[in-house]
Image (tube, rainbow, N blue to C red; front, side):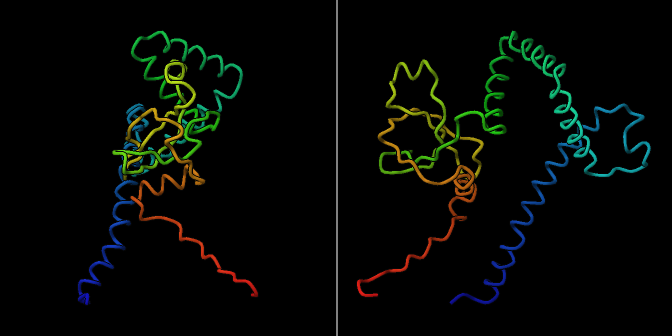
Amino acid sequence: MTHPLRRYFITGLLIWVPLGITLWVLDALIGAMDQTLLLLPDRWQPEVWLGMRIPGLGVLLTLLVILLTGLAAANLIGQKLVSVWEAVLARIPVVKSIYGSVKQVSDTLLTGTGHAFRKVLLVRYPHPQAWSLAFQTNVPFEVAQALGDDHVAVFIPTAPSPVNGFYFYVKRAETIELEVSVDLALKYIVSMGVVAPQAKAVAATYPGD
């Protein structure tokens, strides 16, 4: 039988741990965005003309810069400037590889124009007796020529941080496609399986009912 004090302590942890982690992540994000204030001239710094530091002003500046960038790039002149900028970056040996890869991923995730991360699969990893959640991605043309159409590219994220993971080519026949959304699969991974929808109750029917 669980001691009442232990039960109360665990209940308190269940309340404070998620709240504490959420506040910690928000504080880290706001602190990082506040660094954008350093781009302003000294006389325009909020601490100078307000006489105090107000956390979160960098968030407003970041959002404003992103919005203005989007507005500028939406017109014909802005599109030309973006094309010229990307052409310059494409000529720099190391930068072009990093920038090109990151841009393809961001275009796929933010605009939905790509075909990556459209399917959630089960693949055998890290050994033949285990299954892991994976996202199907695009197979490069050279790899497709070498392996054939019977292989798919998969990204296997790690828990609880799906940002990191492993990239493999596996046989299509050795995967199982799941009828779940990418967002739901990400929740499974981040929560390490703790957050999962409750199974739907199925009413049994019998002849003569």
